[in-house]
Length: 157
Image (cartoon, rainbow, N blue to C red; front, side, top):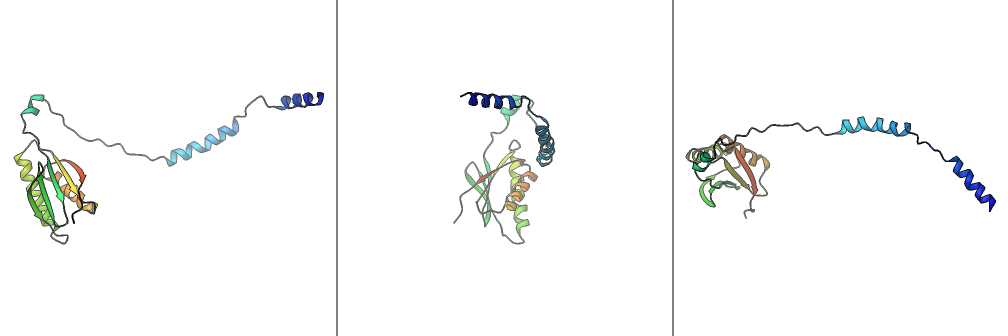
């Protein structure tokens, strides 16, 4: 019994009472530069927006309507408030510039007729190429409809 107590006392005496900080600091010194180098740096961008100066001016504008451009394989369709008002035929070949020009002209007419309209929704099929969607977005912005949103339509059979 005495031997056990003596052994326990010896073990208690050998326990270090201080924590060594140097190995931990060495780890931190090597990890911090690695974390900083591997961090993703995201550029900060500024989006210019304009707010209405008077609430009464907002109320006197034309009532906004829902404008959408549907991208199909064979045609662009312009829809206002759920009703298709124009269909512009398009070919995937060399005449895509002609279809874009016709779409731009139609959107410019809509934007000129309704100066308060700034929004357009681009509805595409799931199989539509990303480049085609971006081209339609660019055409809409150039036509005077800068607020473009995206929606996914149903696959045409």
